[in-house]
Amino acid sequence: SFKIKNMNAILDESEQYILSLPITDFDYRNKIENQKQYLGFVALVTGNEEDRPKLYVKSTFPIHRKKDGALCGYNIVAQSIGSGIETRYTVWNRIFNKIPITEGDIIRCTRMPQRDGQNFTLEAYELIY
Image 1 (tube, rainbow, N blue to C red):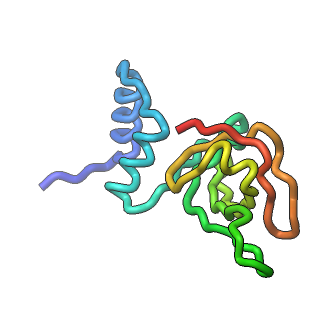
Image 2 (cartoon, rainbow, N blue to C red; image 1 turned 120 degrees about the horizontal axis):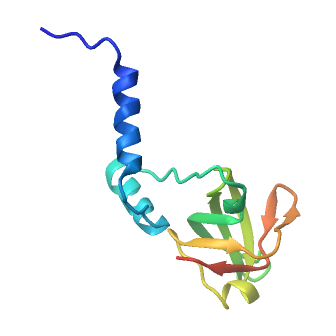
C-alpha cells in the first residue's frame, strides 16, 4: 500500500499545469448551463469589481396594481456576478417592454439602481446573454 504524504504539492503542480495549457475560458452562458447540469444550482461569482453591474437573473414575477389588477411591472431576483449578492429589483412596464428579461438571462446595469425601501428599481440595463 502507498501513502501520499504531500497532496497539496501534487494538487498545486496539477493546477499549474492546467493553467499553463492554451485553453480558453467558457463564456457566462456555458458556465451557467454546466453549473445547472452538474451542480444543480448556479454560483457564478468572479469577485471582480468590473463584473458587479452584471446580473444573473434567477427569477421574474409580475406585479399587479391592487385597485384594478393591471400588470404594471416585474420583480426580478438577480445575483451580481462580481459580488455574488442576490437582490430583488423592480422593473416597470415602460422599461421591461423595451428589453424583456427572462429567467437565466445576464444583464448589465447601465445606470445605478434606485433604492425603494428594501428593493431597488432598475431603470436602465442591457441584455448580455
